[in-house]
Length: 109
Image 1 (tube, rainbow, N blue to C red):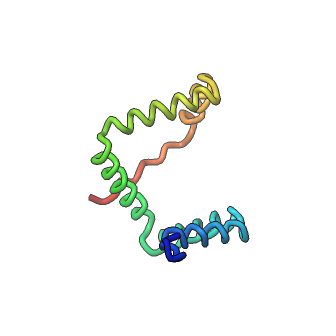
Image 2 (image 1 turned 90 degrees about the horizontal axis):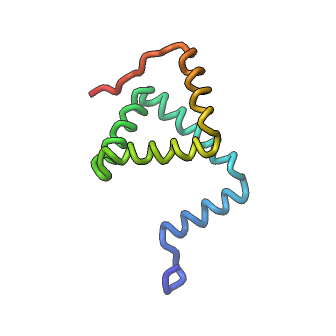
């Protein structure tokens, strides 16, 4: 709060979010997030998500450098190996080799 007892916009938003979470629970946020995503998909089409993902990826690359993805990939891979063991990769690799291949859609340039 400020010295006059007023809240900033961020503080008010946080308080409101906390109260909604206490009243309705996490499932409420999951449901409204899914509804929002479906609405955006209907309005803009599925390529929209690819477009904004590529834009976000480019922003991250520009900010942290392209080797950032390599670093976080190795970090994530090490965490998965520690949690599930090295055999896990062989198991999911066999599953991936058996799945039907679908071509990836590239976002429009």
